[in-house]
Image (cartoon, rainbow, N blue to C red; front, side):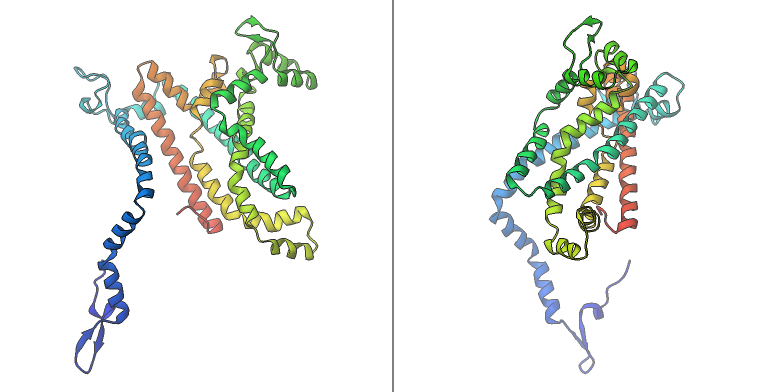
Length: 362
């Protein structure tokens, strides 16, 4: 802890042996004294804008911070004698017993957790590898369309799935990839894309997966691929907005200089566009890594069935089943472990990005 001296902010007069304050320091002190007054005037002046923040703050507090009190259940014993399972505050302290059972236990819950975590990581990793570059490519494609009308029509078409509910998107995917049999009942209404795939790739494995599982989505061999394809279809267009804004911000003089040097379209994209939007790409990548293990629970829940649990069961769906089976503390512990690993990933990604490109979130 350093100590301030008078010489740090006062001027010493050797002739009189006294200290005096400079005019700049006087202005700074006056500003500090009136700082809260300035803040108050700003709040009163723009009170309507700050009033609009109140509902958002209430929603964030009620749905983000208040539920954190239930995290204590991961460290409490739900079988405390004489205490209800819902009375978390009065339950006996359980320590890290739930976490030890998930990670190193000998019960059936341990392999179930690791299988769900493996599926969560696999689905998220494939989404990062295949889903993250697609919006960037789409944004560059939009920038190359010269007709504003054509570009607007295409953008509306690719943005549209984002504004549909997850239930609608999932139902459409199930109908399009529907097989000839559904839950053992003969059904002749085979999905359009299933018909197309079976006609182009007349494979016995493909036909068996479409027939026995009730559709390709419910087959463990094709679930992850179809999950990522439908995810790109749903989010790819909307996610390209940020990258498109960065692409159109590139100065036209950079393109002209590249053209004078003899650069073609591909070279302009490589040496002009990509370096110009690199900071945006890095920031978005860090945010994507931060939510790497936060796989959408609703979509996986709608697309999963006991037939494809081996590939579709993730930590969120497993925790939901445990809650239904009166093992909610294990589910809370599993979700907490999942989120802690996600936090470590985002911290690591931020540190690597800061060292590699001097671009980071903080």
